[in-house]
Amino acid sequence: MTYATDRLHAEIAYVAYHFHWRLDDILDLEHADRLEYVNQIAGLNTRVNGGR
Image 1: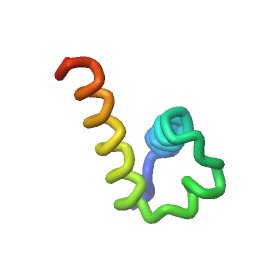
Image 2: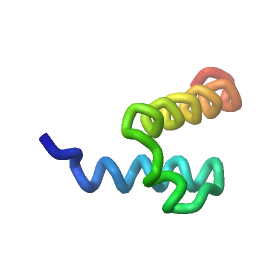
Image 3: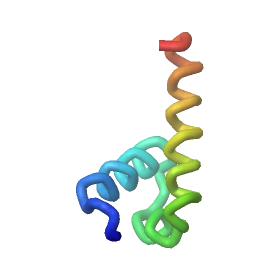
């Protein structure tokens, strides 16, 4: 099974936008680790936006 390219690009853009990490650094992450960062960023955004 392969990971959808559009989903990978969305995750990369999301982490890069919020953490300002380089593409190579994000691509070096294991899939599970990258998803954890995506989830953590989403949680931070939810808290900042008052739970919305």
